[in-house]
Image (spheres, rainbow, N blue to C red):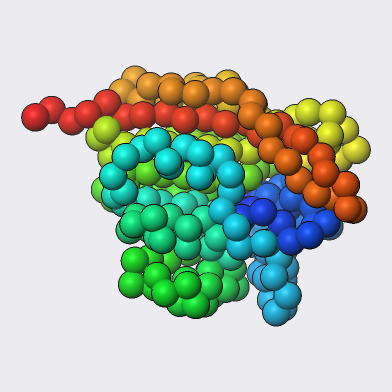
Length: 239
């Protein structure tokens, strides 16, 4: 799937001095394009990298505590930084995004990293995502921000893809003062982890629902910003 959902994806940390463009909170500049595939197809059409290629730090921190690698789904994978990192750790990964150009970039990066045999690609819009019987030991998405609070519905859909005893990791921009200058439309797409809890079914329990710090560099200045982080676990299946 391509990671294009109603908000820009952020696959890995931005290149130096680039703003976090994670679906719906950053580039493209056009307010409508930020939430639709066309804007991201254009963004990924050139040759210059959009992201650093480094894995998102919240993913690294959470995955390190999950034990033996299994299968993973990264929704809104963009250029594939997180997909490549997971594959290098031994996971079998499906990278999903709503941008064909983003997925093509991600496939090239996976091939260059020597992990193409451990990854699959899925072009899909998070707003209409359906697991359709597929399940994964880890389902993750970073900086996906559908318009007008749409992330609750996306999380509800993602829960269907979490295998028994599997984990869900959702990371987004918390609506903090750092984004005070953002438009009302983009701020409305941000969320706290606790905003997503109504999407969890009875057999998916909360492990973490909090804000966690992350350091970024903007215009040569290091800033500490707050991520919304939700970690949840589906109950084990019956023996």
